[in-house]
Length: 130
Length: 200
Image 1 (cartoon, rainbow over the protein chains, first blue to last red):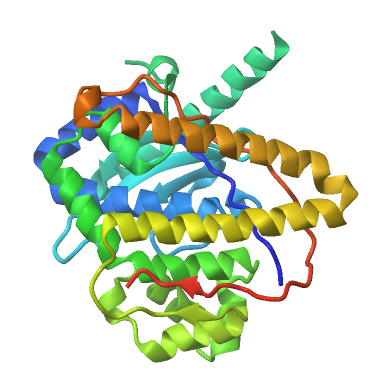
Image 2 (image 1 turned 180 degrees about the vertical axis):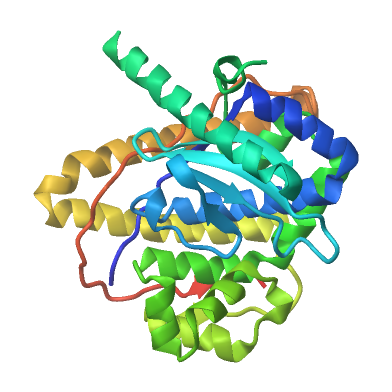
């Protein structure tokens, strides 16, 4: 028999996500619920994964710079295409919530998320130096 | 807000989406929708976790159960209503894990606590046994026991403070630490294995 140990991950919000999700809650509550459920599913799979890179799921979209977008699949019919952008830090086991947006804003959201991840990495390096 | 400020972590961390929603003041309406979706995707999530635990890629799983990789992706990201018993049986066979299915009334909270305590006892005893067999794992397992004990006591204290005599639904100040102990446990023989329950 093999034994498995589940390692918990934590979610950490960013200022941009806290601002953007409020808009979604007002305008698109069903989409917010759908991506939040898929965030739950992503976390539960991360718990049993050796690293975040090996997680495969139909509702996950790897984007450049280590960003992973979570979509609204299995949230019911007629939902607007929505992406919750995350970044998983395998060392600290923290999943950062970067922002949330629709398909129309996808290109600019991805550009923002790439810079945001660079910034997070830079801040982490600075903290480690001190 | 520029990227530097916007991307700054808030310092607020959550151990689950429930805590995230509560902590960010997400409405009860959205929280209820998430709970409903969770119950509608519990089995597909279970299947995806089984595959991941075994280190099987979607491509390999597709090969094992005789479908395409995109079919596996669709199964795991879909809703439970789209599953068949045949798919579940194939996943169980491919991951070499037995599974049980309960059809009937949902357990009461008391029954659920008792069942989980019994499962926890089983796994803690298994870990203790491993600690005795593998000297190199003793420290990690002891640290895990210590964290687990802390967390169990914290949960009990937190929930007890919500009882009417202790102030009802007031929020407790007790912090639950997050178990992050990583224990790499080798395969070992054991006499019995409890079935993996499916949340149906």
